[in-house]
Length: 492
Image (cartoon, rainbow, N blue to C red; front, side, top):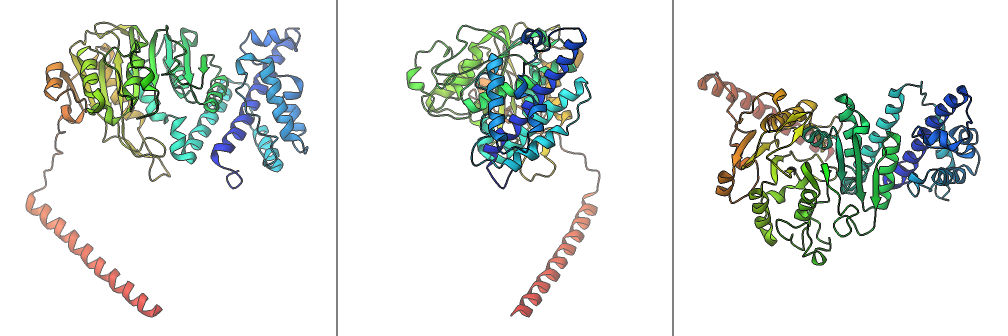
């Protein structure tokens, strides 16, 4: 596929077929149970009652697999997508219909159908999770292939994991105002499963401006069996909020950084700007305040944001940041390492916002009163290159755990033990200390330098050892230089 089209095109081919394979398999399994119980296998209500998509006969995978070598297979797949949308209103407009195009190689479609047909599913929940993980993996790989554009629809897994572990969305209403392909929602469900929670304890809401990404999100959630209220409009969340009067217990967001054309001039008097009107030329603090405005009385929000948001003074951003701190809206700041995001090495940070720092419950534990304090975590030295990549980093599970556990201990979750400042890593700062730094929220200003590594090697011994190594390297350098000159001379 790579030689024939761009990643932006072939992701719809691969992910669309993977989705079709999933819904057909889920349908046929449900159909077998209905037949065992003596029910009508073509009664749509029998499937809807079990949150299973109804798939018409001509749209089923088995039907398409039998005709995979037909010259019209691309048109048949498009028709199958339309039929599934017609039978399942929650999928209306979400599925790709690009398979019948003249430019799509029929042999490639046949090969993909055969490939996905060979994905044997034995009937366990793990099988369906496998399809979900394949889908999630493909989205990540396509994001990497698309470079900077990929970051617009995909938040790297380790960043999602970090926010999810910090926020702990176990029950209540979860919202993402710029949901991309739904990664935060998928991880929320994983978090619940890992902590023996119930999926029905969470209601999921989201909004996405890019219609193509909106479709990917709905397929991603459907494959995971997650039902959510995801909405789209072309104006975007800031200009046309689809949930203006709603409040949420958990908000997770990775908005586009430093957007200048966000219609800020039309929103100068918006009620969301409790801490000050954001500059017309930068939407960063519009997103931050949008998230805070939508928090419930004890809600917690996590926002991935450009590093500049921690220190910028332009356009009144310094005053907004000061108001946020003095208004006890900021719970924690995390500086992330660079190279976590696709297509850019620009480092980002996490803003953890709280509606009321005097209360709150996490994992059935009451949180302590944190008013007048902000936790700073400097994770810039964490992360390692992804195997096989020279430019993409990720945080390890242990590093994510350390960041989350530090935050949990600081806010009073007894299972994590007592909190202590760690030089070079974390610091609980008072409002007075933050004021001394002119309300700049860069963690490095507060955590200080880490402890120097112990070194019991005597100076004289170390100096002699290092000098010996340097002499060896100089000698090798001279040898290589002579060899290069000899070879170049032979060429002449």
